Amino acid sequence: MKSAARPQPLPAATAIYSVHPGVALMQKWIAELKPRTGCSLDQWIKHIRVLGPKDEKECREWLKEKHKLRTNTAWWLAARAVGDPASIVDDTPQTYLAACAGYVERMYAGSKAGLRPLHDALVRLAKEIGDEVKVCPCHSIVPLYRHHVFAEIRPASNKRIDLGFALDDEPFTSRLLDTGGRARRARITHKVAITSQGDIDLQVRRWLKQAYERDE
Image (cartoon, rainbow, N blue to C red; front, side, top):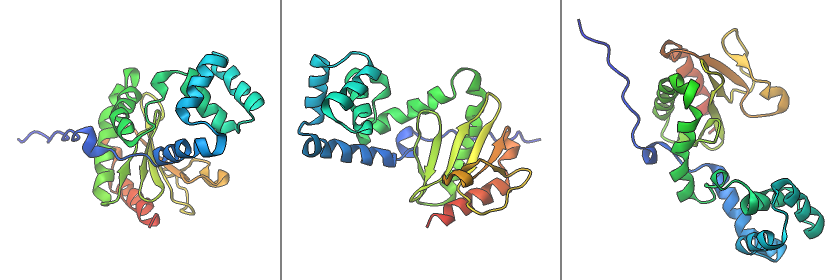
């Protein structure tokens, strides 16, 4: 009797992951910072570290009140000047790709380690459904993009991954559940619970393919 084939390991991170679209937005923000505010990112960081509050929350308020910066700009600058350096490692495509494998490792550390084989199987499945699939890890989820996010892999508990889909008006079922996204006008509208390899079946593949093809 032949033994069951073991799932093949994923290739190196550089072959799996693509640059998150948010990195391009960050690059645009950095490029536009000096024309909009009069100072470059490096100049702002130096100014804040010399004259600004050392507490991140206080620094945000200081930037908004004293320098009249918009909320998002104040948050980003405060984080970069006095926030946790470990949380700011993905401002460029190179640093993002170097960091994203670590996001996944930490996502499935400790009590969620048993979910990692399910995560890897879902990534393999996603890469199989189309040439334009991009896997772009964040700190707590792994979104899947074509032109927009069409699905996401989220470790929802120690025993379950929620695989979300952008399926818009597809009917909900006892298995294909409502994320609340439709009511919030969010892209991820449906989800299915993945607790074992058996849950990654032909129906899940069809839903994933359907979400991918909707994002043409």
